[in-house]
Image (cartoon, rainbow, N blue to C red; front, side, top):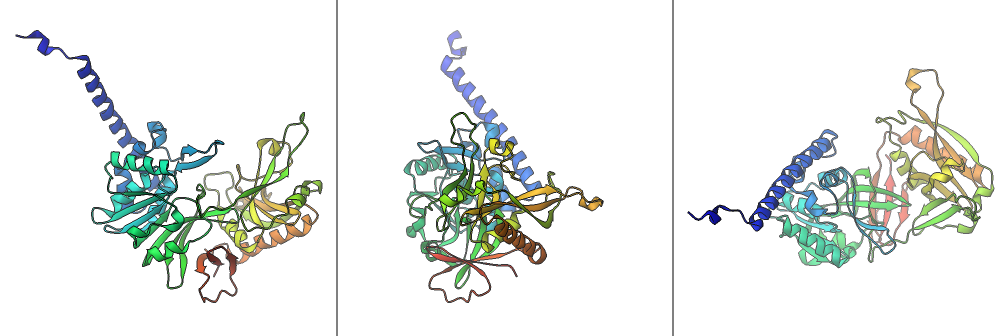
Length: 440
């Protein structure tokens, strides 16, 4: 008997350990993945059974190796690329918005799908699962390294059939057209004609659309003469780069210059096409604050059942040309310089010439139980026309509350050669299209 034949070599021990780790990782990933999808389904953020099956089948952790296994299956964004200044320029979107957008896209077996923004490749893998063997998926990204990364992850996870293209999403990808569905996973401000030309006449587009600083994920159906919205949801995405990139900017409203004084920064986010008097706005805080009560209330503020103000924000986006977002540092808020209802930079604001106004929420003191948890919208303003601007914003809030609070808007995108009658609707001119919003 050869005793040496019964011994396990170091190499074999290593192989066994690696196989064990792989199996344990796969088991853990599946358990965490199922828990995540169970949560999304219970919150009705994933309702399509085919989308649910795809999200249970595709291993997200393979596409985000920079994240731990727990982070990969948390309902959160994973940053995957930063520029030379450290600013995030690519990411894996939070699973809830991935599922929601795929629900709206309504992909069927056999469909041909174009994705603008390859990212990690995860979304393309889900699409490949949904279209099946008889369909096709093309994903386009402007960065070669991002495209290469997505391709490698797709091959490694069993979805090598996805066509990964390094190109400009503004142009779509004519070689694989026509498409039944187009999904855009970067924030855009316009609708290039190529998307219209490469989509079938009964096709659907799901896209994060940015207007005056306000971004919404919108599902559009292609109609005879325009894109027409079918669903709208708040959501933030990295801005598109390449030919479709938009020049975004921040106006500094307040900043202390003294070296020995703690800096208090307040900034206004503006979009390309908005006329801004930066010099005048930088002096707005020299004027006293004006406050105007609107009489319009929001329920359950500060609780998990808080009523959303997103539909009011969308109304202001289209009804007021100076709509934007205002943000401030923690120091600025703590100092009392400014009081904002929401953290980060998602606080509605409006500017006109050298004045600006923003929405705040203040508790209401009313005796009825119904009023508990209710807050009132109050408009705060600074600048030479603070009183006038605050009252104009307050009036728009009241109009929304009186006439449109329970009405969901329709957003359309018309190309310049469209002959549609656009009277009595809000119209915003873009490079390629006219955005039209109506509440009816």
